[in-house]
Image (cartoon, rainbow, N blue to C red; front, side, top):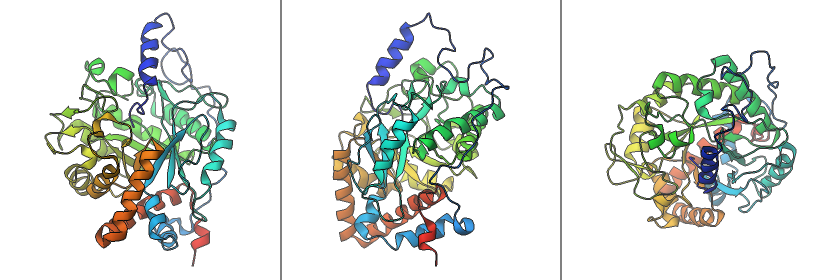
Length: 404
């Protein structure tokens, strides 16, 4: 997601602009005058999360298929939703949902978050745990802080670090998330913001969320972050396909956001071509309209963007997430229950709904449609298999229970 649809980011950005007396490195971890992580500071050791176990045979797809056979159609449809719950006090507002997104901000620390996230498994199918996702990019977009969590610098700083140092830092950040019961980081941002255009780019550049202004820099940094997070057992989501680096307005807070220039040959799309192979990353799709690709539909609802460009041309077979389809102003003109249907029909897999009430309405629409339409039911099953394979790769499916 981008600024996570919360006005708090506007406040944070305003305060940051006003407090000019603070040193540029204030609050960053690890501090270093050179802007790079201190080589002598040992990173937290890479640890398997306590719920992790190895896949029998290392085959997540086989595990997912076996697990799916134990689920009835309504439960299978629930696997396609990531429902919002407050980061400060996570609550299972939608028991049985495939995953939960920790929304807002919390300074409670690792141990407190771990106690809360443990309760989110209530209502889940036997031997299958929900995804727990968070926006933990760094800078102004760091949802979880407090004891046990590092202060993560903005992406503009991370992009200048050496590859090994960035990987070690990401491993430390990922280990902290794993200890807190988080399994999926909605990051890194891989949008390319052209040099000199940052302040005009409200969702990314103005908030220092870009890793760089050119494809090689962004790809290199994204690979280091991905490696570090995966070392810690955390799933990774590249966002926001096909790119938000050249728009002016933020789709969270403004409707009618259109990118007239981004196409299949643009630098922002090249990042995915270069960074995705062998990354194990998932992909989040933007809700902006890209007129060179599809003049009529936001990217998340476009079969041209998701089905043709991402799935076919780039040959991406992993999990495709929507940006938030509940609160974003960009999609408010579409009836709430229809938004998930449009995204899944375009080729997406995992619907993000920051508002649980809207998320439940979307789920009910999807489950009802699957019950009536065998073709759509098959599509739901295909997406659920991708989500379950992702869960299996993160140790959230007890594959041993489905062996043989």
